Amino acid sequence: MKAKWYLFIMVIVLGMLLAGCGGEDEGASGSGDSGSDDSGETYTVATDNNFVPFEFMNEETGEMEGFDIDLIKAIADEAGFNINIESMKFDGVVAGMQSGRYDIGIAGMTITDERKETIDFSDPYYDAGLMLAVSEDNEEIKSEEDLAGKKVGTRSGTTSESYITDNHPDAELVTFPGIVEAYMDLESGRLDAVMYDVPNVQYYVTNDSNGLKTAGDILQGEQYGIAFPKDSELVEDVNKALQTLIDNGTYDDIYEEWFGERKHGTESSE
Image (cartoon, rainbow, N blue to C red; front, top):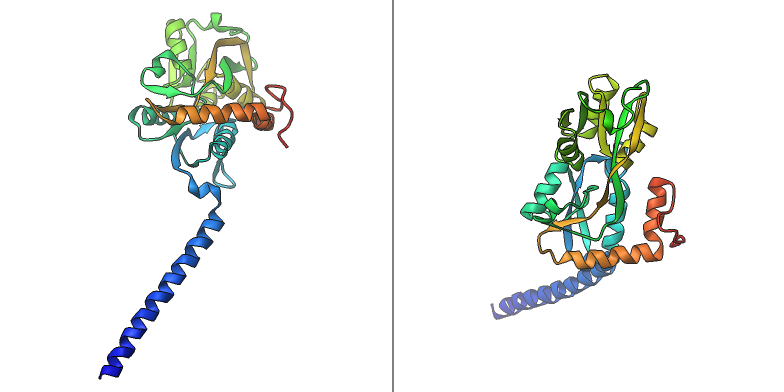
């Protein structure tokens, strides 16, 4: 009886020793495979679900792509943290920053005094503005001075909506949850013009439109910033990483991929 009890105790001790060794091996292997990425904090990044060429869904891969997506990934790598990207309507990005639901927001978001009252921004990372799109055969609208009495579409919750409201109260403003719907209504003749951010208007007119053109000059010079909940400790780290990417040419590499030219004249980082 004693021999059986002794054997039982030895089996338990041996099992504990083997389990301890196995745990150490597994931990060492996991640490080696994960690299430095798994050692940093993970933050949730909110982004627009359809703002070409800054962020949009690649229908073939099911992955988010665009200038903003590549930039925030490079910033995360440089700053030493990990990110999970969640896409949504633009209004959701702004609201998510205001409520603190998300850690970071990047969505071609214009830095404005009104927004700075409730959210924080990084240093500017893109110079933008607003532009009109009209049908190719439209000879009436040559600039914003011709918008009186016209139906002008844009995306709700954006600076273009505010601009039309403040500067063209005599135009009929029509808002849409997504800017593509506005372009489609313009193509079908249900709108006279669309006003939106310059890079998106130019990209759509050049690549995706059926018979549209730009009209007039760039309006209201704007700058995009990366957004954060108020008093976020991430602002300083992101600003440092962004400046490093500008200095070493990585920013220009990303910019050239999406816009066909280098922004700062820096050489390739490769």
